[in-house]
Length: 267
Image (tube, rainbow, N blue to C red; front, side, top):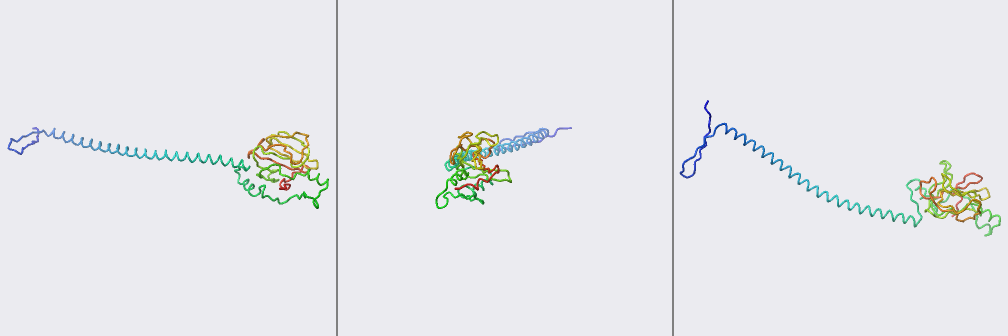
């Protein structure tokens, strides 16, 4: 079987002799395959270049976004620094005004509604400090001297007396180290450390009343010592099992029966 050929003729514009080329169909077929492969390769190459360009564009956008994030982070760090400064300032103000930080909403409401400046107990023990016509007998003066009716420390009430909740005293939140006063004259029955209540002082007022002062930082009196109303007997602390910051746990007992201290306070 004879081979088939394609003839390619080149005719110049001038009168020169034409040129002819004979190409075998085999080589012509191979040329078509090569052309197809070249076109496919070219298309793949163009697509790949497009993907590279897209990645470069995304990279540039990421660089811009990253720069913006770095700037925002710097702004956040500055804001956090300012917040830290405000936090420190808040604590300084609390120390100046002897306020108390509390997270329990019930305690906060108690502090707001029944603080030492605005509190009026529902049942108040009336004590006449002036007496009839401005004078007092020696017996009356002695009775008042041994009646626990003053505030034991400067602060605000953070937890009230409650028999239902078995909280048989009043908590007074105050700054660490604030002085604690004897609320009436008497004899120190005990001045020692208790596992639950920390450093605690108990005073027997020799008239059926006893008072106790707990969670103290320091004890400034001793067992058996006579104290007068208003004497400094210790300082506010957070010893023992105390989870609400520095405060005084104060109790009043009459014939070993716990009383609500708020009914005794005379402001």
